[in-house]
Image (cartoon, rainbow, N blue to C red):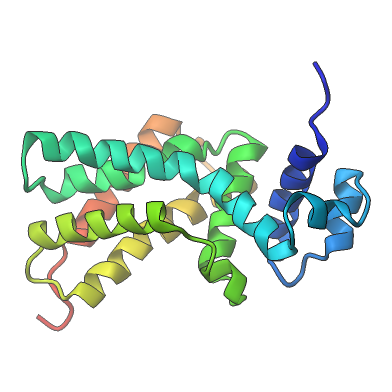
Length: 209
């Protein structure tokens, strides 16, 4: 098998370092050294460190977004108003499917998503494009119909919570041993538990009600 080309090596190195160190904590030199490339390679292949981040994020997020879109399309083909549990499964399920806790790749993807959510760097908040925004807007509208008592702001907060809880769980499962007497959760079991938990959280009464 041929080794990855320079562009792919840069993406792999940047994904690893951005996930571990954040955007500002990752230097161009560190990326190129890990990738085995020269300092000019990022400029040549991507234009800038910010554009490299955007390419890394899209490579990780686009398969998740595509699965989320397909899941919502299937639900809406059956009914214009899917129930909360089915919406949560369509939205959160791909996060579990694309971030398996059993391998380093899945854990790294999880860490990168946690970094994207939490990193204060402006570049971490500005990489998304119309495809990602459209999917989130469609889910926000569908959840809004299923949960009409929630304000748009609280609804969006709860949707962000789905992303955060799932990503942190995947990292924790990979990094930590379970408490004494507990066996590691199998993928399907953890997925089912998460959907049950997150559906209950999404369905909770509005704050202050």
